[in-house]
Image 1 (cartoon, rainbow over the protein chains, first blue to last red):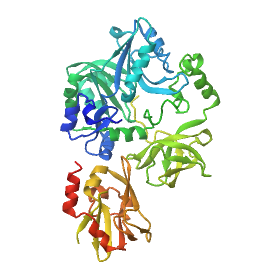
Image 2 (image 1 turned 60 degrees about the horizontal axis):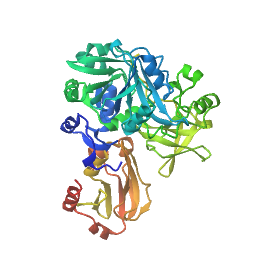
Image 3 (image 1 turned 90 degrees about the horizontal axis):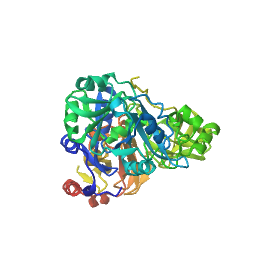
Image 4 (image 1 turned 45 degrees about the vertical axis):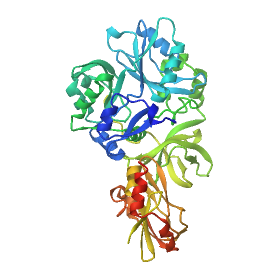
Length: 377
Length: 124
């Protein structure tokens, strides 16, 4: 990014990260902890107990309109998800799309749960894209709607099998949430939190929007539990990769469509019938005729991890695509990767080769996630 | 039997015409958890400065250069099943390979422990 430490932003938890021994690195314009005890140990801890992540660098905002239908119909002009059909408190994964069907960003969209906030839709977007995303949304806003950028709020993620027990201790209501639902609530006296049962690890867990000046207080309360450890961006990446989840700017970007990215599931049935989202012609065409390439998972025979940019080869040795994310999967106990291959090679178990620094390693196309997801339904 | 170091954070311990090579505890700490080490083939010859091995951590791949010239006489097979040895014991059980020294004079060009310590201190 070319950022010098001098102009990096800090989240409200910066001092706590430093106190806890976090190794701070520049990430998307912020100084963020890449690890505390070590990526492997942190990764395993999240899968076995619970981990606390600071994701306050992400962009939070509210689209505010007179009622849900008005706000949802507006958002549906920018994303292919069924937003109109969200029940109160319902949450969806979707994408901001460009006119040619390319992905501008991926985001989480939550309909307000209570009547007091009718017409409010809460969105969370990626840190590196947030300024552009909010400008894009603002430019499209019709009369009567507004975008409220919630940059004074922090965002924490509590992930892992013990997350529910830990959070329900402080906020019993949180334990009642079902997967992909969110709600405004008070947590141990902290007002104005938005808690959703969601995450980026493949585990059960929560994402918690909290007023910035209460973030450290909340983080300390969560960390009081012996089950909870602070987790850095390193483990966040290996956890999401094992869960088969995309990282914007790597696995999806302006040059990939949702169909190529194997995210067709995020395009609602009604939206497929009605269209009306950016790039609909191209995307609906790809849904019916197939896309020229597809995002797939890759598993390997040996332990050398393939990294972003590694070429994917057919058995005949022809280049058929490239790796977009790859690492050693601590829970899988082997390298895992995702990348794009020409459509004829996209079927699970197709043998391929991956050029890892000049040596072709035997690999196989794999279904994702690489681990069994344990979302609480 | 003294330890010598390179600016790329390899260490060399020479004894009786043979040198053992690994990466320094500082390098291992910087890399983070090591998950894979690609070792050279036995019998292969390298010149000082040639890339001879690769160490992969959870974060990235890094090349390991042979600090001295010669022929590979042994590789640390234990790293295959337990690459974490590099983190646990970078200058002991986590060694990478042994080389039959072609030119013992090359050792004189490397840093001794005090010089390496100073070099690392300058990086922080």
